[in-house]
Amino acid sequence: MEENIKRIGILGGTFDPIHNGHLIMAEMIRGTFELDKVLFIPSGNPPHKKQQMVTDAQHRYNMVCEALKGNPYFEESRIEVDREGYTYTIDTLSVLNEQYRGIATLYYIIGADVLYDLLTWKDYEKVFKTCKFIAALRPGADREGFRERIRYLEATFSASILEAEMPLIEISATMIRDRVKEGKSIRYLVPDAVESYIKKEGLYLK
Ligand code: ATP
Image (cartoon, rainbow, N blue to C red; front, top):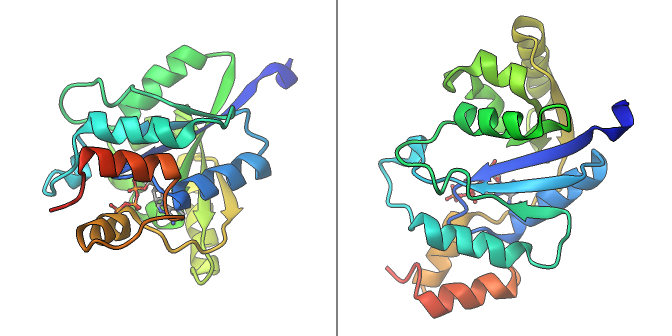
C-alpha cells in the first residue's frame, strides 16, 4: 500500500526570476529523496516581501513555465498566483493536502536559514502536520546549529525535517535583476528560454 503513495516536493518562491540555482537544487533534491514530482509554486502577493516591488505574478509564472519545459518531473502551479490577497503557506498546503489526500506525501523544500523563521509562519503547528520538510544545507553553513534546530523542532512540535546537502550555487534572483539592469549577460545563470522571455518583455531594466 505504502509503495503507491507518491512523494511530491514543493518549491515555493518569488521566482523573480526563476534561475539555475533553483533548478539545480530541485533536481538534486528530487534525486536524493526519490521524489515523483517537484511542484514549483510562484507566490502571488508575498506577505514577506510586501515592502518591495515584485514583478507581476503572471510574468513570474510564465518564466517558471519556460524554465520547466522538458523536465517531466517538474511542474508549475498557479495555486498562489490565482489567489487574491496575501497568500500564506498553510493555505497553499491545505489545498494541496486536499488534492493529494491518500495519494501523496508532501515535502516542502526550504533553505536551512528558513528553519529559524518557521515559527513565525501562520498556523505553523498545522503546517508541521500537513507536510514534511526538506531543508537544504549549503557548504559553509553551521551544520551543528542546523541539526540542533531540527532536533528542537522535531521534539517540540513533532515536525518532520529531512536534511539535504547542497553544493554552493551562488546565484540569486537579486543578482539576475541587477545584472539585467546593468546590461550584463545572464546567460548560463538562467535557462535560455527565461533569458529570452526577460528580453522580449523588457523586464528588470529599471
Ligand atoms: P531574491 O534574490 O529575490 O531574494 P532568491 O534567488 O532567493 O530571490 P526565491 O524565489 O526567494 O529566490 O527563492 C525560492 C527558494 O529557493 C528559497 O527557499 C531560496 O532559499 C532558494 N534558493 C534561491 N537561490 C538558491 C540557490 N542559488 N541555491 C539554493 N537555493 C536557492
